[in-house]
Image 1 (cartoon, rainbow, N blue to C red):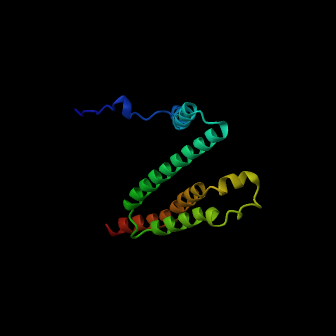
Image 2 (cartoon, one colour; image 1 turned 60 degrees about the vertical axis):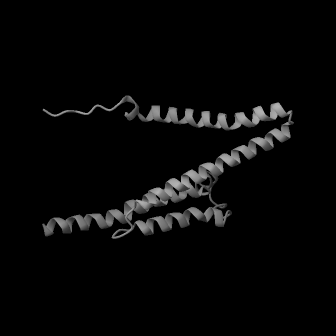
Image 3 (cartoon, helix red, strand yellow; image 1 turned 180 degrees about the horizontal axis):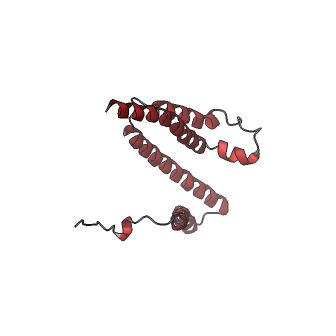
Length: 155
C-alpha cells in the first residue's frame, strides 16, 4: 500500500490564467508601492509637480537598479550550476550574452526594422533569452541524441 503525498495548497501549481492575473496584480501592487513613497514624501514636504516627477523617476530608477542586481545575482547562481563540459552550454551562454549586448553597444542597429520588431529587438534581455532558448534546443539536442544512442549500443 503506497502512501501518496498531498501537496499543501500553497505549493499547488495554478492554472495559467490565474498565474497571469496574480502576476499582473503583483506587478501593479509593487509599482504602486514604489510610487506611493515619493507621493507621500512630496506631499509632506510641499514639493511642486516638477520636483514630484523627479522624485518618482529617481525612485523608479533605484528600483530598477535593485531589480537588475537581483536578476544578475540569480543569473550567476543559475549559471554556476550549469555543466559547461561535454556540451554546447558555453557557446549558448556566450552567443546569447553577445547578442543581448548588441542593442546597448549599437542602439541604432535595428532602426530600419519594422517598428513592431524594434520593440522586441531593442530589448537585449528579450533577444538574448530567445537566442539562448533556440541555441540550447538546437545545439544540445544534436549532441544528446547520438550520445544516448551510443550509450545504448555500448550496454
